[in-house]
Image (cartoon, rainbow, N blue to C red; front, side):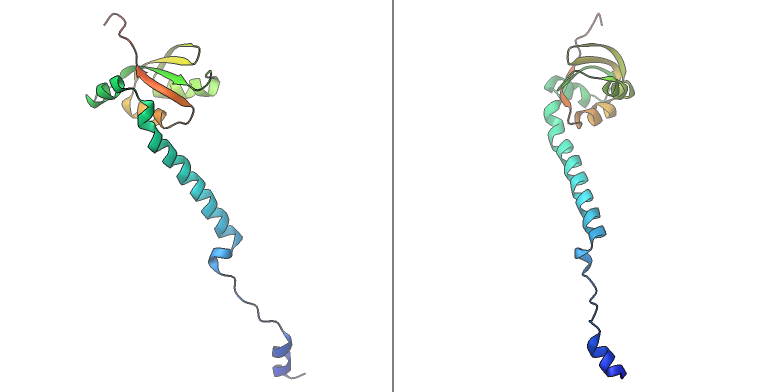
Length: 126
């Protein structure tokens, strides 16, 4: 067989388009899910912070006492998260009291899907 005959017999391998590659599609899918998840948190976060807490946060305090209401009773994982934001003082049902919570932690906590509401804790002798 001549070289010309071999070229006519072999199928031409086409290079697959970059957007049809499985690894690229997987990365794009994961990125879209992650961006959607984060976007949901940023869009819904202001609705979880009460008006009184928002006014207090505008004053730029170093720490603040808050009540965090979750969509379900908090478990050990959630308590660990609360302890990173402030000092946990107790839980009653779905509501947990945090004292000396950092405003940046409150904003981060408000973006979590399992948080129902964050409110200013009532003053206790102050």
